[in-house]
Image 1 (cartoon, rainbow, N blue to C red):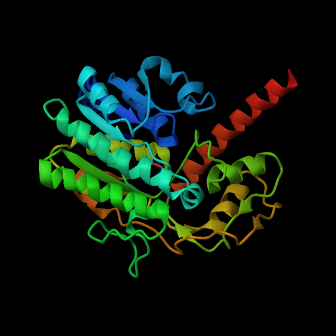
Image 2 (image 1 turned 90 degrees about the vertical axis):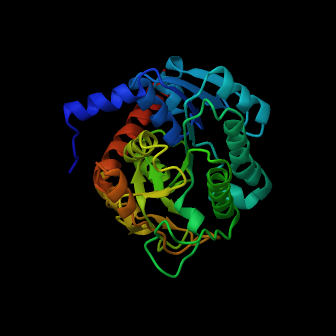
Length: 342
């Protein structure tokens, strides 16, 4: 059941962000496009770092990009990051940009480390240089930063022990961010989220968008693993609210990490079957390749710290989030079909 805010609370949130200078990295990605839109809707003055121009991205398709300042460049460019923070007089930073595909990281560890680790320390170093301006920094880590643990669910006090390239990149970036708080007093907080999904994710090798697109086309979804890995799937609109609420409480919770998820772990195969059921495609059987490597068998989060300290709870259940995501991709398929028809 969706929990609704009161009108007064909504007004206070919008006032907080009105005219606030915000820098978002990774704005063409799934979470980045939604956060950028939410900030623009709240009246923030948003600057976005964009490495590649992605016409199919939600940022472009929804025309959100016309409401923000776009800067082309890379996280590896320290001078550029310093210039952005200084010239746009940035108050708040949302660092979301990363190479996020596990398979890509396994094939190219170096480029993943450059983007995810070096990119993070560059942005933090630039923020340190502009520390008179920057008042709050939220860095996106991941549940993957915990690596494989004997005890579940993950809690924030567990060690960060990634073993495979993507997991290691998140463990390292997470620790680097915390070191800038403990050493230099930067107002940094860390988010460790479950597997994000929602409209706008164009990485169709991911389970949710790939399964939805296959079902829309009458094809069997492909599962790279054996179907048994268990994950916490987290709807993007809930993630947006989590990030904004955390940023609003900085610097009070600087130096802290928070888990965010819906605390409803499901297996890969179960999730695909739920998607097929919601789409009325129960007769389709997924193809199980059992080829995935570097997969942790079970990963899910304890989010009690966020509930206790931030008063945060997810507003969407897993099924509600999936329904909205299916609707978004169905709309995209209709547009694509109409374009091809012309």
